[in-house]
Image (spheres, rainbow, N blue to C red):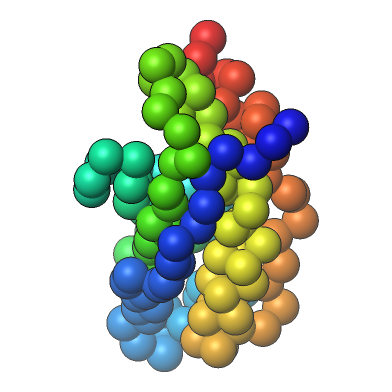
Length: 140
């Protein structure tokens, strides 16, 4: 399939790694397997055919436990569409699938590196994100 957009620029818009104290750090280090990855994608039209996409990754423990760390990265990508699209579903697929497939390896690497640098070097994301499947599920 022909690529019908161009990435103009991409950058880390916001990054946060928070561990309140040594007790929380030691607890999280031993229980980080309870954390789960959440991905949120937002977009807005900046100019005709220019779209800003913000992909947020959050790695969090959803339990009621008080000893927690917080990990978040917001990655901004600015794209230019190569043509006018009559169908908004075509634009949604570009934003939610095509661009994500292109940027995600870099985004994931940056996120994991920040978590490793925060003192959790064992962390790995074992599942690969399938943006095509996520897109299809959201449309049903």
